Amino acid sequence: MCDTTYSFGQRGNHFFQCPSRTDYTRLPPKLADLLKSNLVKRVHHVTLGYENSFLMTWSDHNGHDHIDSQGLPADLTEFIYARDQGQLSRSVSKIRLTLGPYNASFFVTDGSAYLWMNLPPALLAALQQRIRKANWLDRPRIVALGADSSFLLITEKHTAVWDLDQYIVLTNMLEFSRTQKRGIEEIKNVELHPYRYQCFVAESWNGTLLHGNLPPHELAGVEAVRKAVLEEAQVRLRRSSDKEKRKAVERPKRPELREQTGLKKEWSERKQEFTAKKNGLKLSLSLSISAKGLGLGLR
Image 1 (cartoon, rainbow, N blue to C red):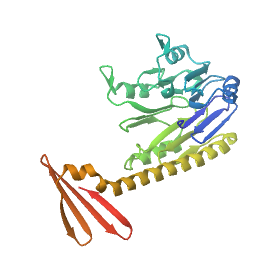
Image 2: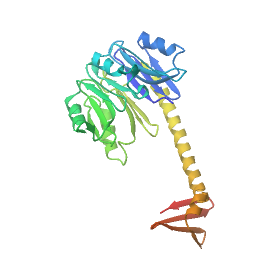
Image 3: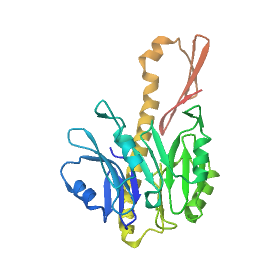
Image 4: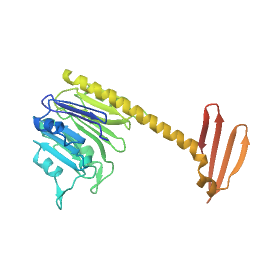
């Protein structure tokens, strides 16, 4: 399954993708031809840049990963295409790249190796503060570069650092998220338009997709993806809920639980209490029976 991807280029082009929907316009000819070919089975990631520059990682019908690019900075190209004993060194499907205005700055990672250049000073300082003795104390989870020196950093421990004077709506969203329980944690993806003030796309894990100041010709595309992202999130939530319900119903029937512990049953009204002692650990399970079905609690 592909990841969600949102990217804006300098020439009014964009690429939006979720597992069930892809929308793009005005792509560089080389990239457009590749997407129209029968070579590509799955697109892992796309980043659009200045003029006709781009990066696309993808897999073919035999499951082999590939990298295609054009017009990227030399240091970035060297990092992406690095080889070890003839094989690509990077985990191709995990490569994520954000380009600043005119490709003058960038941040790229494949989840284990990182490279950046000409980052805004506040972003560079925030990254350096999270490195000690060449090891990450808190890895970047989202890095987005926008117009001028705008940026957003969200770490794996859900710390958010930003300078978004040119993206007021997004700033307000982040400030609100900070006040909510798991607010920053719920942010799944953010893309800043490096060539258009106030333009962004932000996605949450619950399927909410927010956007601001998109060019008129891109509104239909982002709306189509927004609906698909919400439907996919709802399906995931239903599957997760059904899985948890099945676990709750099936857990008392597990034979290994009955075999490994001596159970003492005590009935009180319509509630069963199970108490087990093993190696000094006390495990208490309660099973409630009601008109709505079974309810299992673990204490």
